Image 1: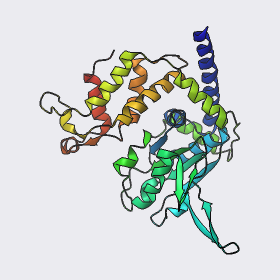
Image 2: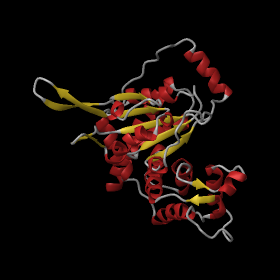
Image 3: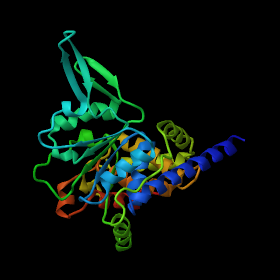
Image 4: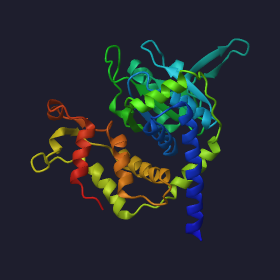
Length: 326
């Protein structure tokens, strides 16, 4: 009876997610991986970093998701002259009463788009750290809770390095996923041309709410995962910390491995991937499908990897070939 109840919850959640995906796809043609990555980050209770060249509908995808989920949305354009107060807010002196009041910044929304986050200096980037980790903001002596759900989606352009400030490892580790967005296929681009060339504002329906999003999270947490798959997840993450560079061929390419956060997030995202497929249990392929997005920004590659022009994804592929699948 309990299993039937769980299966019904999974079926209902799957239908809601499919409806949400289809609504977003009315505006964002193609880019299914980006849409799924955004939804996965929100369901996993974390944040997402998107890397892609301009014009790939990153901003449109986030704005559309906020509309479909019927939540508050703020866009923050990161620039070199941005100040922390422009993000979190500041203390304002009230002359009538002679005291200070808090004026909250745009971070007090459900969904935040940190556009081109690597264009702002470190002191501005760090203003988001407390918000992303603790879901609260401290302004002066006052600490305020952020709304629930709270989700940061940051974008960065991989082809520009002039006037940019790379994100520190501590902040990169706060992102559950790093999505790499590719160009659409010719078929998808033709559809984009025929749709967006005529329509300027395609309406979408509100199919979810913040409360229903919380229900989806609870449903995802009930998805079963076998002990052997849990051990497989830990083995994959532990493999990035391998120090034996002689007998382990890929070890020489990794300077620093992934933190325990990678294990936690792979575990959560594998469950959500199973939910995307309408299953009540996790299989090894669910882990394989999410591990690149979870780990690619957590690996610090060595000089040997750079000299051989290897990317984090290349190294993760080698690890997947070595670690036994349950």
